[in-house]
Length: 445
Image 1 (tube, helix red, strand yellow):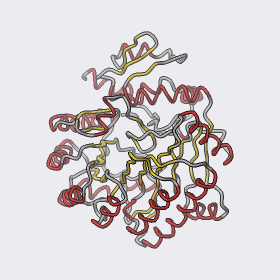
Image 2 (cartoon, rainbow, N blue to C red; image 1 turned 135 degrees about the vertical axis):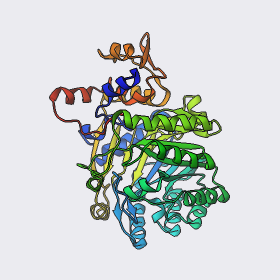
Image 3 (cartoon, helix red, strand yellow; image 1 turned 180 degrees about the vertical axis):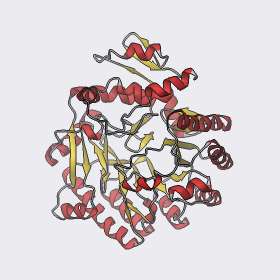
Image 4 (tube, rainbow, N blue to C red; image 1 turned 90 degrees about the vertical axis):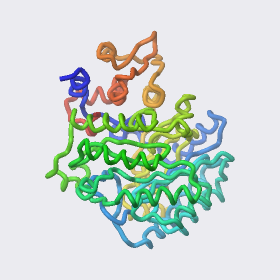
């Protein structure tokens, strides 16, 4: 067995993806609505920048994808999207009534399937934000799109609203894998949608791809990236499939198929990375590849790239306000997550209250650890301050990090282990491990 294979076996353990710190399972002491609004104001004052990034969660999908672990509701009735839109407006109103004047730095639509909504509903949501929270001059808009249902009218609607980035959910280009996971979209369909987006005027196109899917092998990866090479999106997110049927019940139907794990799964990523490198893509952060002409690469090179619940981004306002069911907001000093069920979301908003289900006020240690993990994930190095770990030497000996005084830097060999390196400084995770209880996370490799 190779040394790299040994490292995979050693470090392939359950661990957080660290889109926040602390991760959601460790949240405690949620803020009240009054505290939440006060934290937003404090972040505005501290940063001297009264701007917010918006995330808007659209939970509807027309068909169920068996691999999916997201919150979604399967429906073919677009009127449900129109009703949901009316409640998003109520949530927007709560912020404009309780937070003093500020501006919109960016908007990202995720899901579910944002392109489930009618073009008229998309206009209503975005214009409602712009009317009350004007956009900054350098506003950035992005959205996720399902190639199977997205229309040119939807693309044109987003473009006319100032959006210039679209992310297509591609996952895999092999028909057999698509049939197994319940998401059949021929490569010709992806090509047509990509060409359409470019003809409309979109300047940034992302493909979401997944490795480790049931029945996926090296030939599938070669086929997928052969098609990617014909289309050349400027960014690619190449995510690890998280098989968690205890959490996502729909994944149970996949148990009868071969699901790659360990070194076999990592081989799929390494083959994808090899093919992407040959196409001219550069690996940045975790699971992301970019062309050197992309804005995300420029941000990465200038150490300005950020990471939040939407993944890697160049947007970094002091506050992230997330609207819709299950969406997570970050005030800079606390987190809140909205309720999961649509009916409950409607019920709470009808009472003119924020639809909060859980949250967390960060203490000083949380803020310190969060900064270290963010830097590791985004720029591959960090100053440790007063923090340290008695396991650092082991990671140095394994060649995953270098230590220089009170700072660490991830080595090239350490790139696949960013989650494990981040776990070194997670004092909350350490307590859970010491308790002997099972870890509620997907595997790191």
